Image 1: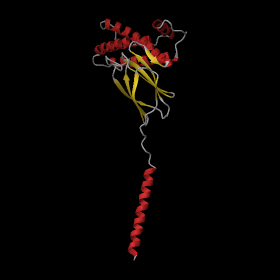
Image 2: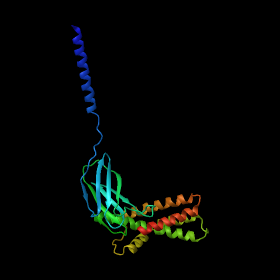
Image 3: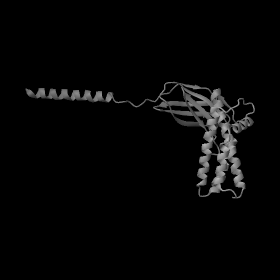
Image 4: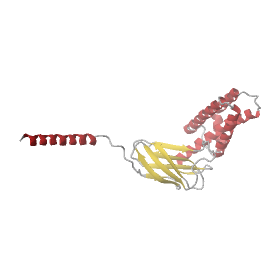
Length: 247
């Protein structure tokens, strides 16, 4: 008579165990689901093939439907902005080539706001999109041109000197050139952009001048410690000339 009761009790305990396990599983954090966020495109021909938000990243596939390479583009989500600029690339053919698709993963904030494709800059300097973002990128390019020309002028003088100048002296000259007074940078900026107004540099231009300075100084520090210093300086000269042709 006791056997059925034992079986029933065991069955009841097993059933309770199943509910406990199921309950514990239901409370575990589920991985973030992939989402296709709304996209607002401020350009005509930087086509969004796909946009997927996966956790803290945005996976973008962008197709260049322009006739020229895209040299920079900008994406924003709320106050967050991401800009990718190809003008500094070490590759001879830089940017997103016409009729090709470019894939990128962008770390993004946790936001439900739409993805904005805000600007695209083409080879040659023209672009379209948000006017303020376009101006910001173009100002960064102008500042980059000023600093690269300063560094390249000193480098060319050094290479023509047939070794009469020490590399340490070259580096010192470049430091002085890149730290030129703001008035000199403003004059150089107006030569590149005669219609520019104002009596001082914008914060964006100042920041770009400083960023390029730091990058150039890092380049020369690496060249100074290279086994073939002159060979590395010649490589650097070629790279700067390529970058200048894009700015």
